[in-house]
Length: 103
Image (tube, rainbow, N blue to C red; front, side, top):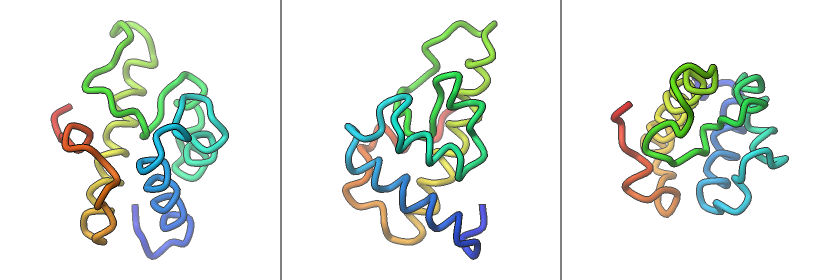
């Protein structure tokens, strides 16, 4: 993800808004759908996955396609958190548990 592209800056801004207000980041919300569109994750969103998911591991069995989707969204989440940290915009956005890099 390159922040020189306006859509990427907009996606990062929306991601941070959702991190700061988890009530807005509920599965299948309009806000998470908009974020998924910005990040090219709309198929994963329809299967219930989002970079806003703070869970430590997938909750579904490994034979479901959503299992792989969780890992894809987790990688995008980690990249968004990294970009936010580099831009100095992470304060108050995430609990320490939500920034783990283990996948």
